[in-house]
Image (cartoon, rainbow, N blue to C red; front, side, top):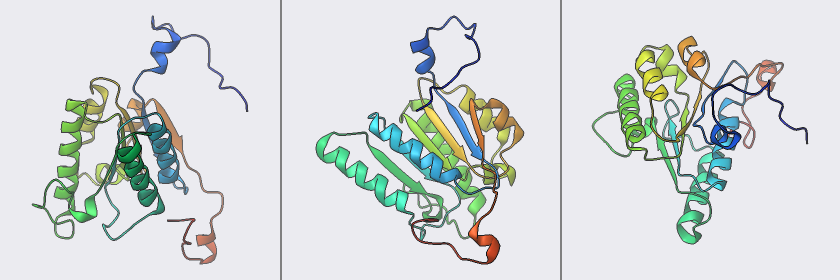
Length: 204
C-alpha cells in the first residue's frame, strides 16, 4: 500500500500528532456516482474508532432504505450490546426528523431542511457527536433554503474535534473554500447512460 505524501512541513507550530487530531471538514461533490457511498465508508471508519456517528439525510424520502442505513443501524446495536465501535444515529428529512413532528417534508421541504440544520447547529455547539454526515446537504444550500455564509461560519467555528462530511452535487464555492478535504466525483460512464435502471446492491 503506498504511503500518503505531504508537501513539505506546515509552518503552523503543531506537532504531527496534533495535526492528526484536528477536526476535518470534507466535501464530496461532482456529477459522478459515489459521493454518499464514499462518505458512508468514512462513517464506518469513524464507528471503528469508537466515535459517535450521526447521519443526516437531507433529500432522500423516508421510504428510501439504503443498505448503509441497515448496516450502520446494526453496528449501532452492536455498540449498545457489546461496547464495540461507537453509537450511531440516523435521521432522514423525508420523515420530518425524529426530534420534531411540526413540519411535513411533503408540504414544506425548505422549512424541514432549515429545521434539520438548526438541530445540527445545536449539536455542534454542544459537541454532541464526533462525526457528522450531512448527506445531500449541498442541495438545500444551492437552492437557497439554507444560508451558505451561516453554514460556513458555523462549521469554521465549531468547537472541539468534530468531523463533518457533506455530500451533494454543485457544492457552493464558499463551502469548497472552507473545507479541508474536497473530492469531486467525475463520471466516465454509467449504466444509466444506456437506459438501465438502478440495481439493488449497486445504487442502494
